[in-house]
Image 1 (tube, rainbow, N blue to C red):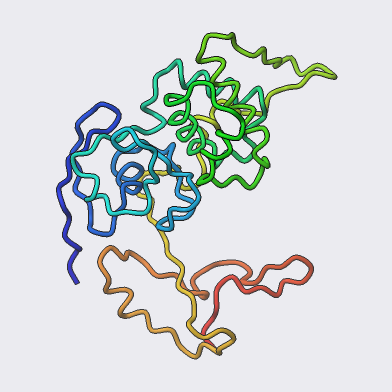
Image 2 (cartoon, rainbow, N blue to C red; image 1 turned 60 degrees about the vertical axis):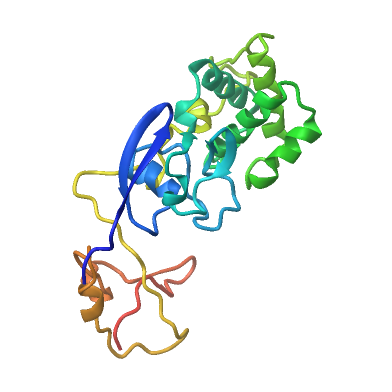
Length: 258
């Protein structure tokens, strides 16, 4: 089997002209993260496009980056969170830290980009308008109240109304901002998919088509012949205990032959 063909694409990303060779099934999010090393946009639902974690600006409009092939963005102007101005990045990081708007923080960069899009069109939006603008951004931690608080505050900071005071003293009775709050809001806090080491490989899980079936034998010949496959790990190849569990170790991590 041969490697799939690639297409040469030229994009304007954060003010720079870049050229990449993308496979037909690679999305704009793949290009930003895997080709250009821009990790603020997160992959939470690719290619569904419903969570908003990968929101970027495309020709000045907020769009998700995961739902269309990268080739559809050829020649277009892309702005990621890394490409916002320093004053605006500072305003959002301060506001999100002061309001406690990031908990796990995975969705925060996409929300910041949607907020940026809203505030440049309407610098003083109502809470209802902010909530409406965030309709395509899912957050499972905060309940959105603090997120709306933060976007209101970011708008005020951008309008020159002063910055919030953040108390990092840690004294009893003080409200200390969340650890790494600035990094979370700006997409600088690395999650697992943002990390890489030299020589790192990516693995894919293969699930049985037949639940509760007894797997008599696993033939890996066709999988081993696929382009890019370096190794295939079966249950017998993994050292240690095969089963885990909460009370009893009754959940097999890998299905063994037989």
